[in-house]
Image 1 (tube, rainbow, N blue to C red):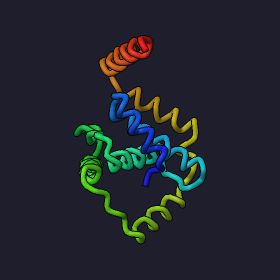
Image 2: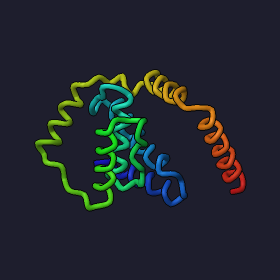
Image 3: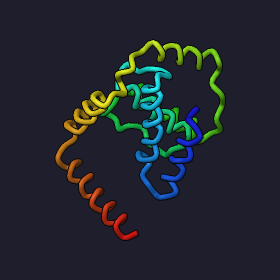
Length: 151
């Protein structure tokens, strides 16, 4: 279950009209914090991000599943299931399952949330995107800057 502050920050982002990925970012940030605090670990930075996105979808953030081709069919199905869970009411995970998940994650390393690992992940992801995507995000950033200057 996400922390109350995280849910509030995501809600605030939604009210400000920010994109679902920005809202989901709050959950990913929380997950990284948990790993750094030593609450649990993650096998990789990718896994840590995936846990955060899953929490976001289950909390009701309108984040679509990844496009086909970018991830496995299994991941897309899981994302769709998480979104459906977010739309319907929240049913508590059985204690046995929650305990097993926590125990498994506790055995994993803590370096997945290090600055170096996050930087490496960001660079790899950025390198896979083409010039059109870079141009699109630059244009979006310019619009955002323009909008925030007016206030």
